[in-house]
View 1 (cartoon, rainbow, N blue to C red):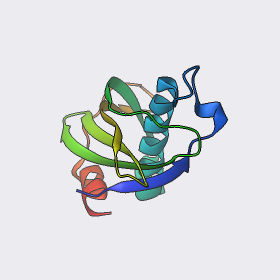
View 2 (tube, rainbow, N blue to C red):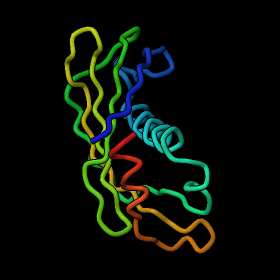
View 3 (cartoon, rainbow, N blue to C red):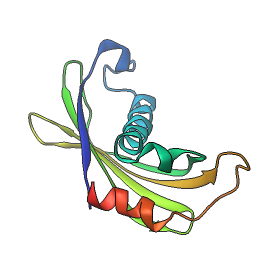
Length: 131
């Protein structure tokens, strides 16, 4: 399993009225790192003519992040079957290693022209397991 990660620092724009990171921001970060992982590891010729769309998000909010916290975001593919791929994203406070958020998202692979689901190829699976 190949893990892709990045770090971000919580800004004032990320906060809700309780001065915690807004849940909507976490969803945005989940989508951002997922897309960034795909864009980084997949060759251009593989990305041509296909796109990924979210079928389902399951998110557990464990602990709050606050202004100035540095968050380590990690993602990996947990399972792939047919046109669906389950991607896990975990977010940690990088100083305390405390788990903040864990998500499992079902992504569906589509033909970009017909918008119909297509099977995740062995080549795509290999990109995520060996990069």
